Image (cartoon, rainbow, N blue to C red; front, top):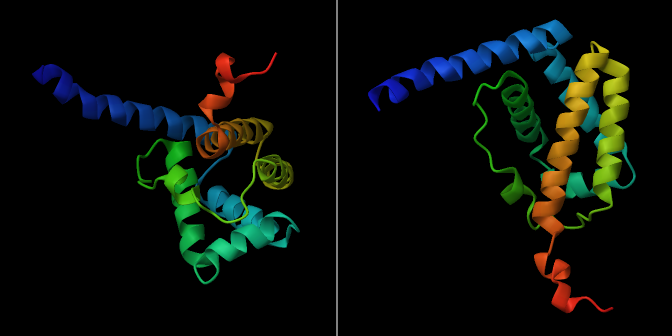
Length: 155
């Protein structure tokens, strides 16, 4: 048991080192993550459907949100464990969030990556990660397991 406990920090460090090396090989660093977040959310604000939803929720708190998103993406990319937020709780109850906004969010994210990603590999990695996040949030916020109950389906 002691060996497992003592080995955990080394295991976590190895995961971080591999992630950092993987990101470096794709041209990803903290400067890119900052640019990605700034560019993407600038576009979100200008988007006719996304902008009003985000601005209503974050009005007066944009700088704080931007730092949180930089921390989030950095933690995800570099496996740093630095982000301690709760994304599902943060998005629960946001006024006017609907499932149809997530494809728009993903499309805008893809366009941003197309314009600024340092490599095709970086674009693919960040896009795949964003798609998983969008799917997870969509399921968490909108999925109702009762709708899949065969007894409730009409034949």
